[in-house]
Image 1 (cartoon, rainbow, N blue to C red):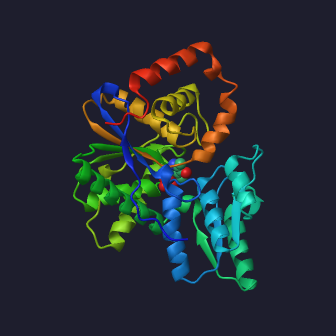
Image 2 (tube, protein in one colour):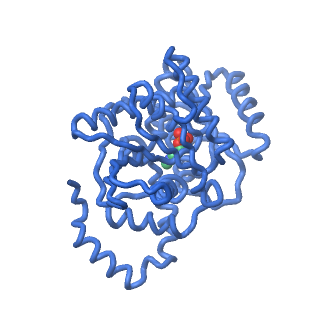
Image 3 (cartoon, helix red, strand yellow):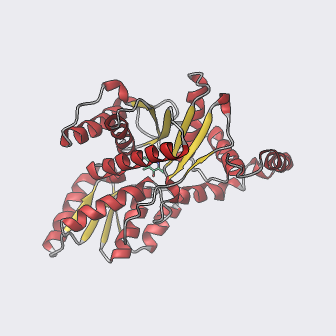
Length: 337
Ligand SMILES: *Cc1c(COP(=O)(O)O)cnc(C)c1O
């Protein structure tokens, strides 16, 4: 599996809320297992793994984890055994879980409180069996993940130069904080002053923000770079809709609208929640006449989990069909300036 080094596209959206210009960086189009930020990170982990001559992958994540799907795909392509420790859950299997199973990764379910021990035991057992396991933290957290998004930041810079644009703000879904740490370090190392807003999809600010700061700080230390100012990390926890995987109608509605007007799939756990959060943030902070970049961090399989439920909601009402037709002809679908 060769790494991709083609920058992902940045496209302008038809959205013009409060006279802002909106763009989206399509990380969901990274050409590996439905893409996303986990796919970008995976290339870096894979490189590190092969340098260390490991021959077996161990990671951790829930059944809806995009990270686990991508790691299972990488392992399957390379022929490495892949073991995934997952907290037991009563939920119906998600598309990601079904993909992980189809890709022959071994899922080890364990109560949340025993995850740490189970990871250690699994790694020990693999070593005893003569394998050389490589462990990746849940969500692709760690320096390799941060590096992936420092490099993504440089892609953003390249697009800015080519398109003669400057993004004032960058929004994205923030989970373990690695993506945000990478973007913040990229911004810092380039001497830029973009406002980078991580919309938390799970953690509260008290728990999430220090992790972003820690990741960014240790990355900069490792590269002998001057430290960040504390206020570089904006980790907003007000749009979590009750926590990881939870969402409300405002979020599903915006997912529908974005799919109709832009032809882009968002999901309720990550990207749709973050996109909705971005719009709330823009409204609440009265942000106007700015050039705004939303990083689409992937998650298309979760769009389909949600899509299975769409058919039970209001989306099939007649007036929605009328709205869709009107919207399509007004905006000229896909008419990016
Ligand atoms: C994992 C994930 C995130 C969060 O990324 P972090 O680097 O963990 O903060 C955001 N969006 C999607 C689609 C993800 O799968």
